[in-house]
Structure formats: C-alpha cells, structure tokens
Image (cartoon, rainbow, N blue to C red):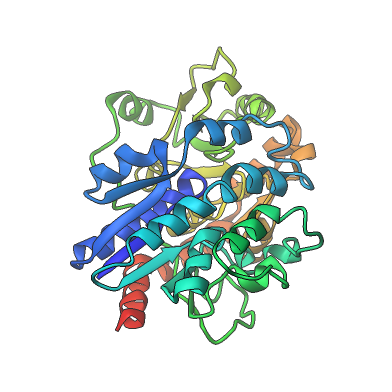
Amino acid sequence: MKIVVVGLGSMGDVLTFLNIGIALHQRGHHVTVLSHSWDEQLIRRAGLEFYPILNLETAKEALDHPDLFHPQKRLQIVETHFYFPAIRPVYRFIQMNLVGEAMFVVAPPWAFGARLAQEKFGVSLVTILQAPWHLNEGGQHVRLDNDRYAPLDRMRQDIGLGPLMTNITSWRCSPEKIIGLFPDWFANGEAWPDHVHLTNFPGIDQSVTGKMDDRLERFLAANGGPPLVFTPGTAMAQGRNFFQESIDACQLISKRAIFLSLYPKQIPFFLPGNIQHYDYLPLNLLLPHADGMIYHGGIGTCAHGLRMGMPQLAMPIVYDHFDNANRIQALGVGDQIARKHYKTAVIAEKLEKLLNSSSIRECCQKIKAQLTEDDAIETTCNLIEATIQ
C-alpha cells in the first residue's frame, strides 16, 4: 500500500509521525513522509521517502515572532506561517500521486491539505490526535470570520469545492477514522465519537539510535545525585527567563540539572558547574537517569515522563499545555506553575514537595506499570491496516 504520512508541527509532532511511518514501512508499505525541509535528513536516515511542504524561511518568521506564545494571538501566527503554507504542497503531492496502487494518508488535524484531498478525491485519511485537547482545541478554533480562513477558502475555490460553512474543528478531522495516541484513563473517561479509537502513549522512539555522548555520561556519573531535566519545548525561543529562574531554583535546593533547548541564545552564558545544556537529547535515553522533569506541558514530553515514572512540574504556555498540566495534577504525578509565577522561590518550593512526596512517587510508579503493557505505534498501525482492508 502507498501511504503518505504528514509530519507538520514541532519536533515532538514530527517524531511521532516519523515513528508511525517507520513502523508502517517495516510492515511492507511504501511510505512517504511530507514534512519541513529541515527534517529531510532525519526522515531519509530512517529509510523513508521525503517530500518538503514547508521551508525554513517561512517557519523562521513564526519562530522569531514575539506573539508565537501569546495566549490570544499565537494561533493566527501558527496558521499564517505553518498551517496555511502547507495546504497546497500537501494537496498537490496527494493529487499528483493518485495513480497506480491505492493511497492512504495519515496526518494531524492541522494538515488541511490532507483533509481537502479526502473531500475532493475520496482518499482514505486517518487523523492522529496526540492529546485529548486536540479534538476540539478547547473550542478555540471556531470559525468566526471569513477573512481569517481566506487561504483555505481560496484553495477550496481553486479545486472546485464550495466555501467551508462550518467551524474548523467540525471539518478538519477525518470522518473516517481518528486515532488518539493516549489511553482512555488519561482522557478521564470523556465521551468520544464512534470513529475515535484511543490507543496509548507512544513508547521507544524508533528514529533514535545509539547512546548518550561521553560528556553526558561523565556528568551523570559524577557526584551530586540524579539531575533534574528542564525544557520549555523544541519550538520555544523566548525562554531566557525560564532558564534563569531555573538556575536560581536549582542552586537554592542544591540540585543538578540538564537544560534542553535548540536555541542556545536563551541559555545564560555562564552556567554553574552542576548544570549542563544540550540542544537535544532523546528523553527515553535521558529520563531513566533523572530525578524529575520541569517542562512546558507538551504532550510528547508529558508522555515520556509518565512512561518513566517521573515526577513532573509543568509551566503551561499555550495550546494543549494547560489541559495536559491539569490532567497530570489530577493523576497525582505532578504540579504546575503559571508562567507569570515561574519564579525562583515558587519553583524551589514546588520541586521540594514533588521530589519528597511518597504519594507522588507511588502514583508515578503506578502509571509507569500501566504503560509498560503495550505501545501506541503498533496499535495505531493495526488500526490503519484494518482501515485499509
């Protein structure tokens, strides 16, 4: 079967779809991953075909935009620089390859070009949700004016479809099948439409091979106890305050730390000897050696923490972060801090409570035991193949 996998979003988003693509390829399917131009090497190294749908220049305008993480303005920035520019490339690739054997598409809900191809050509589409919030984005994605979604309407007009008369959340997910990469207990038993299938959190990242480098191994082996892991997410380039306050909190409670960020300019130039910075480290390799995780509330990081039995402290910023942080708190495995309250004394106080709480450790181990049973990627592939048949 010819399968198109659309990886559009943060690094965490892309890695999830890449792992689905790898697993489908291993099952004998012909897989092409549509993603950002800067992900080409990663995708080709995994043995999959690649097609670019977004260039670095377009994305950089969004990543450098001061409103990217603004609670009210962020969605328009993401739509303008990520979602809308990818519509035509995704649609055209599917259109051009609708020859020979049948095609099947796997995509996130914001890959509008895939949904258009399903509507226009009847292409089979499975929408992948990585968090419960993504089904309706908290009701925030309602279509209120035509101007905002003009690029989508122009595309619809160009391909002979009428204007979209409903809200985006009612349209953008496949009416054929939706797969949620999280267990039902994380979704709090909420009611889901019949064509939604919940699986589990993804497990080992198949795109990551090898081991930790010597510098990291020496740091982990040094005296001082397991470090804390701090990351505001792979897309965050405006986190200088996050890291500075985190440094001061670690010094206050005498904890070692590892900072993860792709943007070194937001890391203070002089770090204490008990703190190291890395651009990126696979969490499935790092977290077994850590004592706790402080992050933005993103679902990929959250899932890794749950799988590793890791106490979590979330500083939600935008998107699904707030919903995930609330669920973590309700499960008894972590706590959260509002971004405006992310200050040294507050961080230190919450971390000491988290790290010294026997009840939180017990909850973490209970969740970890639940998540060792199966993996979402294999279950997702089974559901995709069942749809194909």
